[in-house]
Image (tube, rainbow, N blue to C red; front, side):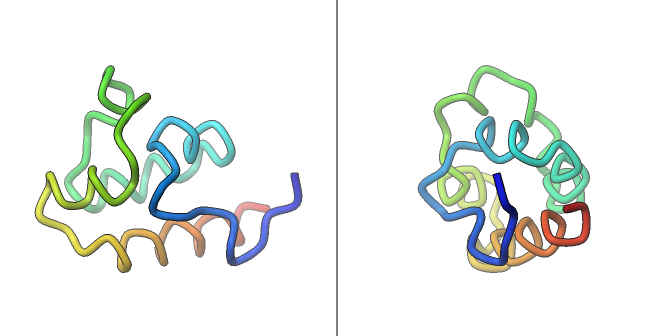
Length: 72
C-alpha cells in the first residue's frame, strides 16, 4: 500500500491504523492512548478513541498521517 497524507481517516479502527503503520503506536501513546493493543482497538474508530480519551480527532488524525508519511 502506498502511504500518502490521506492514508488514515476517522472511521478506520485503531487496529487498522496500527496494522498499516506500526509506528503510529507512538502517536497513540503521545495522546494518552496506551491501550492500542486492547480488544477495543479492533472495533473502536480513531474518532471514537480520540473522544474517549478527551482528544481532538482531527489533531490525532493529522499526527497519524504525518507519522505514516515519515515512516513510508
